[in-house]
Length: 201
Image (cartoon, rainbow, N blue to C red; front, top):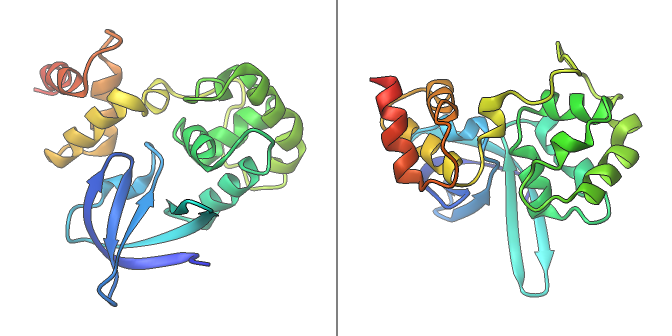
């Protein structure tokens, strides 16, 4: 089982990054929309902690910048109805501490904001993990606040727009804030980028 990768960040493609290891093998690793790995530039050396999914029709890697994120992801996918893709969608809602915070606080509606997560599944996540995540370190999280708007906007077309802005040289925080400032919904990533640039310039 592949649990850790270190190598050159080659490029980003549709929710995943490709990492070239010293052995000359390029690994495609699925990552969340809020992963700090997205701040890397092509050619940078990156280290990724991974979960490897093995199915009859193929294998997939899910990567995280630290062991805390990986541990939370692995807790999420123990819940019935939450597979690796759904687990990654929940991880895309915010930082690990934010996610653990809303789980500990019993905030199922915030969990249901994740793409592909319904109300019943969100409630099951709360029921099964509420006591378990409290054992993990939670640093300075206000459980009553839920997710920050910029973090909640980190999926779909908005997430693609954030990534596009970071490739233009803006920091991830600047990109997220600019995209979150766009009040229109159902836009394409290109349209979000264009409107966000008006906010940044």
